[in-house]
Image (cartoon, rainbow, N blue to C red; front, side):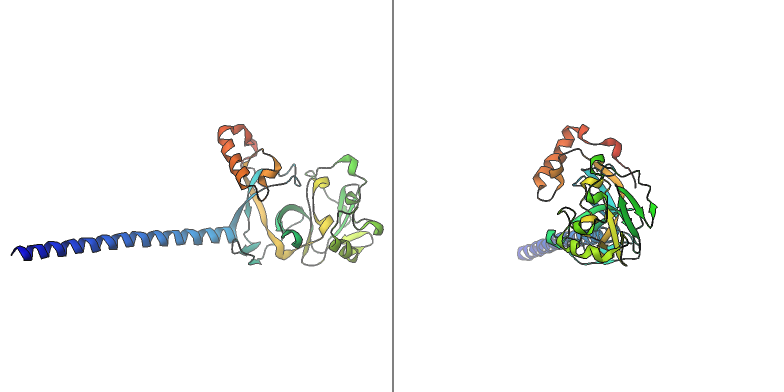
Length: 269
């Protein structure tokens, strides 16, 4: 009789252990499934809808400042798999004077992401005289543009340059120096089909289409929609390879909230 009771107890314990293992396995499985869908949602949002970006340079001042944290909309412009080179352009195209995020056609630099203003769309004729931009013979109204009065006579502020200075005083890439003359008609630069001409608002401190050429439509990523954070910190903090310095900057903000440019938060474009 005692043996039967012992067997029954042992069997019950085995059932309890099995049930415990099954419950634990179920919890692990549910956790794995939950994280799987979180990752899928992240890839979908990051790859097709929005991305977060930090501005590392002053080429768009005063429109966008170094340390501005932006939400960039990719909707309708581009879709791809995050952290991979795979992407496809979608149905929306940049408009003239719209701020655009794109992959710069600079393969020797790894095609970095730039943020500039679209100045010329396919078919536009562009000419710059003493810093004033003319598109199709009409002067653009550019209240956002920042100029250095002493640079008005430079080749970059009088564009396209003369044939003897297609290199723009050595600032243009060799490829663009050779390609540029093919697109100059009667002293104006003509934007070819499927290409765009980009310039920074800080005209005399901007590495833009004047120096490396047109941006293919396939390189367009999206357009900024809102500033969700803006931190006043040294430029190099926001560049690649400064992860520790960036972490220290975020930590410093908790102690010194005055480093946040509060008035810029939630500014929309």
